[in-house]
Length: 279
Image (cartoon, rainbow, N blue to C red; front, top):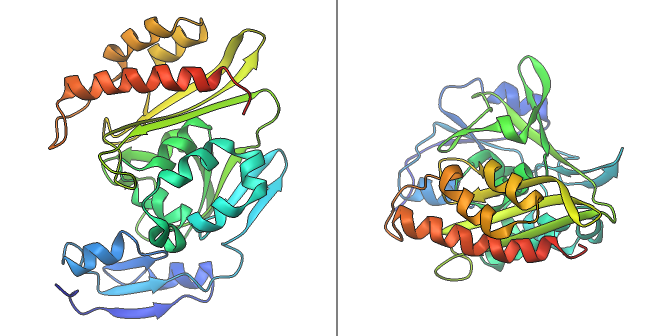
């Protein structure tokens, strides 16, 4: 199929993009790896596509003030090649090779993945696990939203219709940070049936500030808070049992809720081993 007719405009700046989004049924175009597919299947039919790829400054990776900042237009492949990201955000570096295939990573953007908010995507869970925050510009100015508050439902975020996601910030890793990542997918590059992104701080033999963010098990990334408490006490099996309280995965064409919960436990055991090692 081919998309329904639409108008096209190239934004010169973030302010210009916000202005263009005032038109009814306008949509932003960044990497287009999800949008173009839905256009071609006529699942999306915007009146106007606002192309933000030419906006200067949204494709930078910058370390400042104890954080790593990723512009919303940073592409997956660019992030994969970044030594700065590998050093300061090793969890994201672990997740990137699992996203799609090289052709997708060459065009897809960090900001696009977060704004689309697919519950089976890797990056939303990573940003939640890292306790990140997102900068949003809109008609009323700029605001910052924590990752915990950004993802609000199935494909729903804190973005209003005229908002533009401009940057993502995560705390920069140091020698005490421990991270882990694992997922189950039917084929490499497919969306995960179940996945887990984790971050913690080594405090002697224990883990502090532990954040376990599962994906593919709910409408948004899911913090497994009871499992976090058990794993912080170095009791992996208690953490696995606690997942029954933390997760309520829906059935889908791939697996039942019971199977998904079992897979989540398998991933938690694997990630627990990763968290015991320096990043």
